[in-house]
Image 1: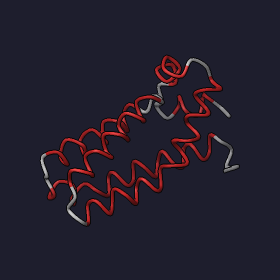
Image 2: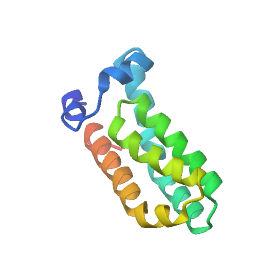
Image 3: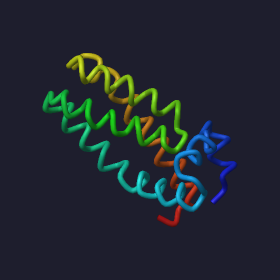
Image 4: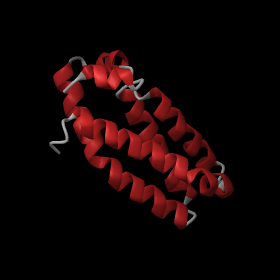
Length: 120
């Protein structure tokens, strides 16, 4: 696992280490985060499709917080925007920006898959 790969993609690993304490804890948590990404993407899509903006906002909030825990600050900002729009029940924004959210999740997934050596 190459930490420089994460850093070169704008991940603030040091911020993550402040929470996790050491690289072993950070990597264990990051692996759990990675394992849940695609299922959370599907959950968000279901909430969007069902106009369940309350649960959409809750899940976006969770993803924002988790992303911050690992130093994925830019990505956390995307989740924050979706969280806030979900709280406002702004379905128009969510519909028109959902692809951006999906791309963010996929970019994180691909980065972490590479970080973990594609062994997952």
